[in-house]
Length: 288
Image (cartoon, rainbow, N blue to C red):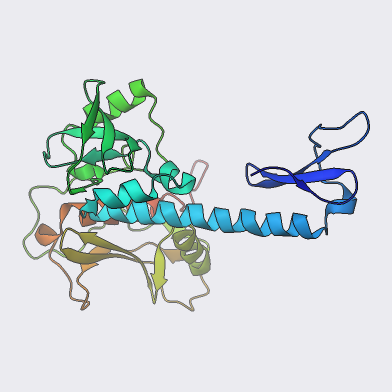
């Protein structure tokens, strides 16, 4: 966006999401100012740019949230759709450098470009640029990616920076041996917080939903939707609170036995429980 006239002797523009001014007169003409002059703070053009900046920020967050949802669900995404949204800077920032899989599940590449013709350009693990144009692609959850350690190492060499946490997302693999009727994991139970409100606030700040006495995370793992839930205490409890066990349930609220929990739902549930537990009160000193 170019510079717009605003008041006598000034122009304004949106620079990196912030309204910035520059002088158009005198010896300082063309020089970008460090702060917005008082005379411009209530100017209509400044107000319009502020509102535009806020909209762009919400749009960028919305794009990132949608891409994250595609990645967590590992659902097929039409290649034509990626090509259509790619010219939008916010969509491109959210999609660029994500690991993408086309028709061959063993062929993984980092997304670098999408053309109007529906062709995707990827950098594969050999460092070569390849072009694919399948009908759909997936942006796999890292727990489903083969050779994840190798992929992470190559991403570091390539200087990959992902706006949506995929390659370096914390993952938990489901143990092979689990009691057939077990429905709860307590690895991250017992984390103490000064108040239930503080624990609920932490869950919300991390992007999790708080419902009743639980922090929840809903995951669509291929065709099955599962909800992971961690007990955080009664809603109106005014004393200290502790994280409870982690369990999974279907959309009807029925508990799912641990051996039946899908791999992505397992990983995302454990990720939520670990993130909540990490904010606990840690005692210091000899008696800790």
